[in-house]
Image (cartoon, rainbow over all chains, first blue to last red; front, side):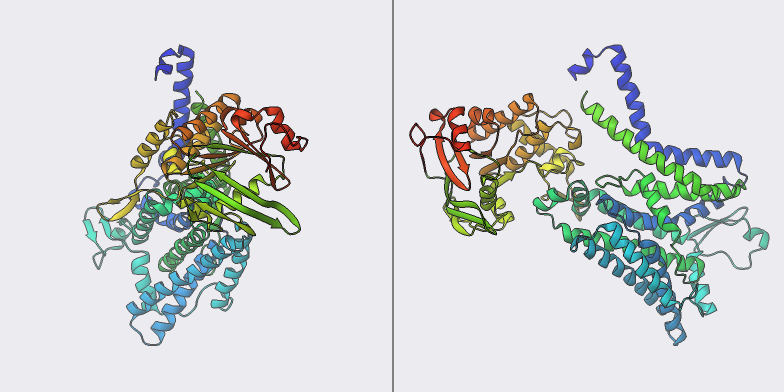
Length: 373
Length: 256
């Protein structure tokens, strides 16, 4: 640190300035999210409420779950365009299995369990094929997953016989789905207090309107998935190897990492988190829909990029994707509350993506500069 | 000198009709720095790749410490202590020094005595002492490699080889992409390898490097070894003559 002592005032000032910029570039997405929340809270009536925040969190789960797997793929310098339809395939499969099992006289709980299992399992198939194509056949990820995009889309619609939803779910089944998909571990009713697991029966309509879901089940499930996959990526050998492959596939190979197997597993993970998203979508909307994740695909990529993950691979993390997903969800809800045409959401998200990439570049340039001081 | 640590005898490698390496005999002794010289296409890299297991030679036998390692898998040859440092260094530049020294062999510890997680501080400390041993100082070990200079990256690659007990280091054009001060640093690294009795095979076009560090120069031309010159007998002029093929058969060079 002898060098720093010799620095003149001007240089020291530059160093301090660059430290501010450094802080800004590293945490801008957090600050941006905070700024959005503050802005909407001040300008939009009803935005700043537990009820609304819990609704934003629930909305964000779809994109968030997809962006978790997407982050892994993007860190290896790949991309998975197929997961939007994997969500749908998983949703439709789950719905059909549940319906058919329940209709043939099975216990609803058993039918639901089997359906969830089938929905998660089916989501692994496109992931596996993507992974094999990318790792073994060396098809560029963009092309392989674009092909899978069409295949999975077709498969999902075949399972609904071309319909927009899986028809014929019994009302008993729907009610059970709703209990989880729209339920909460903990409720809060003003002037009444906290309730675990379920609302008290015979609640007055005016009370129902003010109920806050403090811990919606979809949010809890998503949080668990986030924690598990963030931990794997940040702390385990598997996660480290993911970054190595993203940094240099050649270096990974020469250091003895089984790159092909690793890539296959990563695309399977990507399918898996999309599968969870699909199953949750069914639980929330009680209708198996092929196009459940269609619009969320690009949002999931956007969330990943906004979170600072580099599309050229090698850098990024799950927390970034979580923040990115929240930014998108806050924008969606906030613009609606401000009564601004929700089409603006696309424009704003587009701008945010571009800012994200610019900030990422700035950050890398800054890092190089500091290293050469 | 003692027994050679590595011998390659009667090595031949063909690519279709092309003879890349033609009945080559090569040996290197402990603590020796051997420069492998030759024009482009002379067969240097092919010979090296036959030794490191990347190529399988059509004829010939490679022994290392008395064991036959001909056509073994590259990973097996590496695990026996033959480390090849290619020009691209095979580093993950998005990660720090510790991660790179332990690339593919990450040290883990058990979180809550249960879940294996990467032990980053251990790896960073070990990497730091490996660099110290080579007398290299990198300001911040948390720095990603992309922010280090070419010489520092080269040093990380060498430190990695050393850390994993390299018994023979093969370097392909280590100074090619470096500035002059950095080149000096790499040459110093090669000398420090020799001081630790680790032999180095150095492929280089840079006559200055070769004259500065090599104990022996082996010149290849059209797949054959055409000269094997001890440092004391070498001059730049003589080596260049052998490389371009205009050397007379007399002089101080030992012809093979």
